[in-house]
Length: 130
Image (cartoon, rainbow, N blue to C red; front, side, top):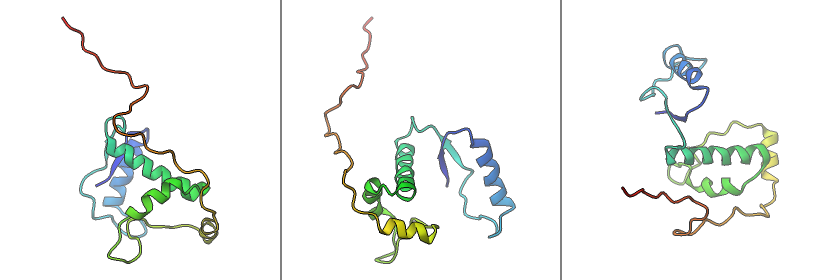
């Protein structure tokens, strides 16, 4: 199942999904789609917001070497037993691998999470009494 954030690309992605499922590409047809791609507004779904953050942290790691968020999620990529990571497929140039391997540890950590019960600058919803 493919779930995506609502975007201007919805129609294009629906078309690509149909092509990959019914026509295929150089590797053949995709046969394991459970449904057509589902588009949700990230403002309405915390899971889509989390997927956005994970995708952003992966992007930041490979694009600019920012490991802070990536290091938080790396232990949770799927593995089979103690083998290599199977939940993230890497297709990067050897130069990128070398650059990432030579990065120093981050000097600025991500900010600490806000403790439960402390909510700042969030408007309170009030009800009007009749």
